[in-house]
Length: 161
Image (cartoon, rainbow, N blue to C red; front, top):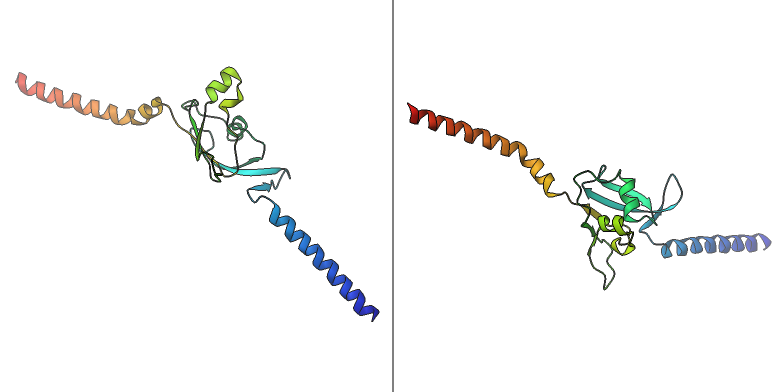
């Protein structure tokens, strides 16, 4: 009889502990995780475009946009910092899906209103300036000019002879 009572009490205590553990896991926000190396509460964000190390990165849950850019090595020299696009993955009713940040204005004024909060699973896109586009197409433009010059010299040499 005593053995049965001990077994029943043990089962009840174990089931209560398991139930409490499952309940606490259900109330945790799955968008935040513990960083495997530091043990701090962290979040995953994606950063694309004109940064030193684009991709998916794990950052502290309280990271702001400046910190996030620092974690990925900072912006490149061709980064357009006055209109950084942030696409929200977990949009709450009434919130915007796409928000913009102006880091240039923040650096000049120190005004936090230019820096939106970063949330888990956000995608941050740092676009390039017009000089990036010109720089990418410069080899093609140079080749086209060389071909036009060659064509002009061929036509000019035919007119002379």
